[in-house]
Image (cartoon, rainbow, N blue to C red; front, side, top):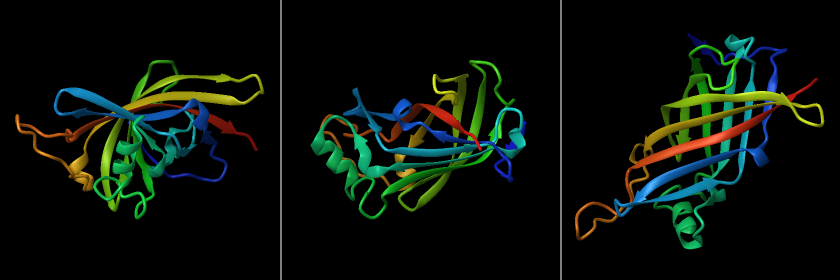
Length: 190
């Protein structure tokens, strides 16, 4: 089942709780070990709910400057013109086009979100494989819902082509990047 991202007045709105969410990436270094990193500054709005999937929508923004791999020099290189060029392109955005699969109602149910991922000035359709992690009420009476997602990207499609050939063959930085996250949304009442 495919649904569109059309929203209407009266649609439930959910805001990302960035303190209980993460977006991380992993890429091979020298074709042998995996370097992991994350983005610390995330914002997202989810519209709709499991009972009204036809009104669902999702928009997310990541602050490129918030990249963190645990190594300051590497982070500075990733923010620079060889990679994300944060000065000229400060945000990565994702906007859902449609949701595929049965609307999740039980923990562990899977679905896909298809949308446009904008990095630098290139917008390319990607598919996020998602899992519903549950829904509950926090101690302050707010309803929360959790999801995980993952996808694989070829960084060159967005112009992230910097690399160095190795004497032994291969390259310094792999082109395939795994992206995954766990996100928690808070229902906005009234």
